[in-house]
Amino acid sequence: MSMIGKTSVTIATGAFALFSVGVFAFIVFETNNENRLRDAAMATQAQSSARDAYTGSLRILARDTAESRLALRAITADRDVVSLIQLLEDAGAIAGVKVFIDAVSSGEDEEVLQSAVVSISATGSFNQVNHLLSLVEVLPAASSITHFELERENATSQNWNVQIRVRFLVEDEF
Image (cartoon, rainbow, N blue to C red):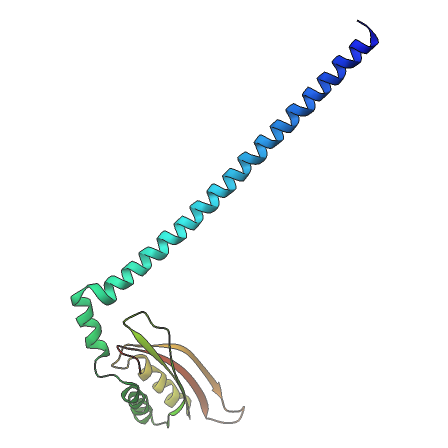
């Protein structure tokens, strides 16, 4: 075989090898890309399914189940913001401290249910503010303490300051 023939065969073999490596790399890249897209789609679908299930259960609880609706009405009935604030002030009177209403705002809502967030503060002995805190925890209303801070007025004082944020469920907007 002549030198030109050997060179042609070497070039052809090199071109074929380069082409084969390129095809192999393309196939690997596309396969990895398809796997990433499939994994992302599965993760998105799982999140969507979980969110749909949660939303569905909330709708069933809040809207579709007559018994649940009656139970919700029982714990939120006759509870407007003014009566809820009165509950907090009464708890302060029982604990022996004056409750100050610092702020009232609307909380997050879930279609049928609305919430009201009331921020209160009070000052008194440790036992008094602790008693207030325990009374707020067991108010006769659908409520939860979302935040509280308890601190001594100063190093020599016997007075303690408490700030409490309470979230109440109410049936209608306030």
